[in-house]
Length: 176
Image 1 (cartoon, rainbow, N blue to C red):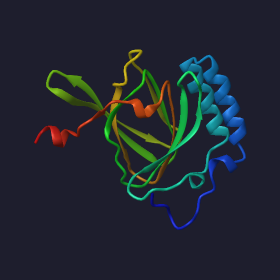
Image 2 (image 1 turned 45 degrees about the vertical axis):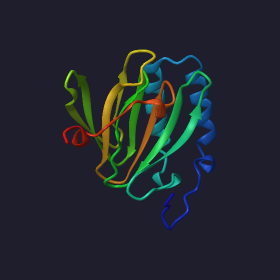
Image 3 (image 1 turned 90 degrees about the vertical axis):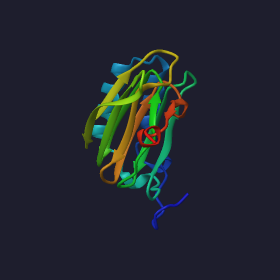
Image 4 (image 1 turned 60 degrees about the vertical axis):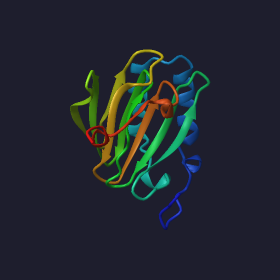
């Protein structure tokens, strides 16, 4: 793990850490995705998380799990270095992304008989987000690839461990 020259404080030292964990615990207890989106968006507008509270990894992104519930729901923050690119990946049935600071480009894909096809792209700036609903029990929902156009902090909620999401080979590898 490569960290910047300055040591970030951990999120557990952040002044809103306990309030956010209690809110997530309550929301995840009986999860209603649209309510989660509305409540968390309002929380983040009124209590923005500083990007410097999260570790920076050069050329990629770091993941900080903020809360996991026994039913699988989880919340995490991702700090993206400028130019970082994720794999092409899917998600559990519910996923929510929110950009706290920075800018992300998201290329969305759909599965076809010929493999993955890019369907559209989104640009998310400060205070913007997106969500997707997929089929229960599947981890190939909302297939996308994320690009950090600048140093970015994003907030993510998913209905299960996001690392269970299916990872796809890149389009370049597929076309070789």
